[in-house]
Amino acid sequence: MIFFAQEEAAEKGFNAGETIIEHVSNSSHEHPLFALPRIFGIDLSVTKHVFMLWFVAAIVFILVTWTVRRYLRQERLIPTGFMNAIEAVVEYVRDSIVQPNVGRQWVETWSPLILTFFFFILTANAIGLIPIFEVLALLDRFVLHTSPDSFVKHLIHGGTTATSNFNVTAALATITFGAIIIAGSKAHGFVKHWKNIVPHGLHPLIYILLIPIEIMGMFVRPFALTMRLAANMTGGHIAILSILSIIFLFAEKFGGALAGVGVGVVASVPLAVGISGLEIIVVLVQAYVFTLLSAVFIGMAIHVHH
Amino acid sequence: MQFVHYLGAAIGLGMVVIGAGLGIGKFAAAAAEGIARQPSAADRITGAVNLPLFLLEGVAILAEVFILLIVLLK
Image 1 (cartoon, rainbow over the protein chains, first blue to last red):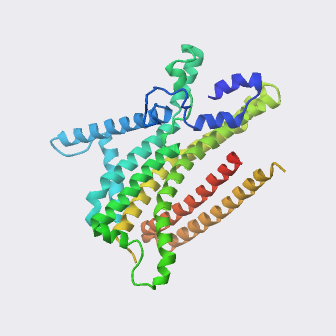
Image 2: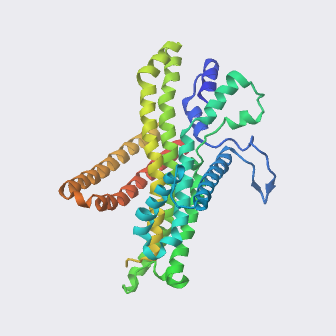
Image 3: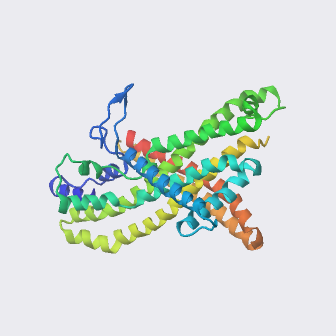
């Protein structure tokens, strides 16, 4: 995206904010990748984040099922190669995220959900960091020269991180919200689960204050999950791109490519590399945090602490 | 006067960062001290520190999102 911005900069000035927002946000609804008909007034066209969502889901599904099937087909159940990586992750998530929070009795019930969250979020976050479509944009600019309305041109607009879209993380948090209710209902029965929301045996007047707070808390938890994941993924990308756009701002301000290159070599690129390193940690930590908090909330519904 | 909301957002962002930094610093200091006193309990201390740390981070991120909304929506 920045390469186009540079070209436009010569004509009407480089707008850093617009370029960055275009890079982190979804591609526009007016020019979707695949146009689909509206159903019940909902536009079902595939934009870039939807495309990335499916792409990530396909990668996770193929990699994990293929590896696990191959593992189960072996005569001696000893993992080799990529199976080791998956086994380590599965064991870690089961033993130090799910089991301490959910309890020994319910580990087998909730591990699959938490593991799915972990693999999906980790893959989606990590793919967002790899500039595949920027490489495609470069190729298109200098080699392919596709027409302005081609599939490739649509593909290089908008961000690549599916989890930086608030709708995606809201959907994931909604699954957690449902899982909390199902976990409580399975452990205590449906009616008892709703009674467990507030501690019993208090003065009746306290309930007037407590019940609204607890009901609010029920919705705040998935909301915080949504915001945390999406804002973290968006924030990191914005930080990297702001630092990189200093190059173009300097080149424009001091009227020459040399100023831009100088700032890029001295400040921008080293800083951006540093923040990219930090982003790799953030990618891992956010996948961990989402799964940990989901496990904690499910555990709170099962083991009521009042 | 049309830049007042930018000023408010900037001051708010700074205060959020100060608060979150102090909070995370206290967590890290307490955890390091605890682990130094009792290295064998490192895993449990890390586990106990992690959850409130992420809740704190969540509050800070929420504040940043609201600041972004103030700036974008005016």
